[in-house]
Length: 257
Ligand SMILES: Nc1ncnc2c1ncn2[C@@H]1O[C@H](COP(=O)(O)OP(=O)(O)OP(=O)(O)O)[C@@H](O)[C@H]1O
Ligand SMILES: [Mg+2]
Image (cartoon, rainbow, N blue to C red):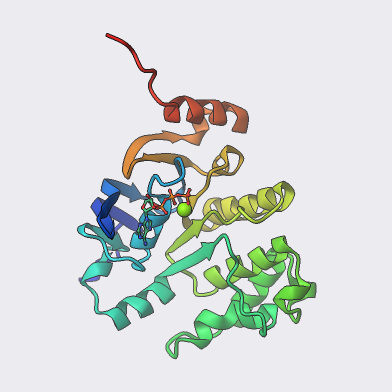
């Protein structure tokens, strides 16, 4: 039986991850569970050090968990051999980071095609490539190298590279972190459109309520645990969402009983 048929794109079960730095032990994830359904756009928020990037890296199979499971399309990443996991990630997961991680000597189009060129089993779908380039407004930029592209354009190339394999799941760690607010909002609009119109599934880490407002659901981490979750539809705009988020993460007042 193919486990991917009816499985949600992402199931995270009771994930724990502990780092040791000399004598110091850091519990980066302490029992995180999360189910993300097809077409959902989940924003992961939380203070610096709350475990957001660790969660994304474990979900992507880049960091092994100490305990718990990650199922992508019903497949358990930790149970795979390294080579199988790398191939699975390339075919099923699109990754986008704050640093665009483009190869400076390649053109925009060559950068977009990298995951396909790295995998003999994946073929270039020219229609798909053309659609992506047009949709991301990169038509006049395809033969430019990264140093001739703006930050927003470089990140759109990185998004196209993440989408070119038609992945089940897109994972993005602060993708707007190096962009000005106009380019950041444009990127969010494009990601939101991918979910609404193409049924894609996105998990995006951000500090910014104005970015999280484009998601369907916000998951707030604190000290490696899920502190709270809420649907963005409960809030009229990014300001209301920001106010709610700050209420959640505000430390409880110290009372002298
Ligand atoms: N490779 C590592 N070795 C040791 N400690 C680590 C490692 N990666 C993360 N940590 C620690 O785990 C905790 C969670 O880190 P993580 O990077 O997931 O936080 P974050 O929520 O992404 O923070 P930020 O918003 O600053 O990016 C932090 O205390 C961090 O110092
Ligand atoms: Mg981080």
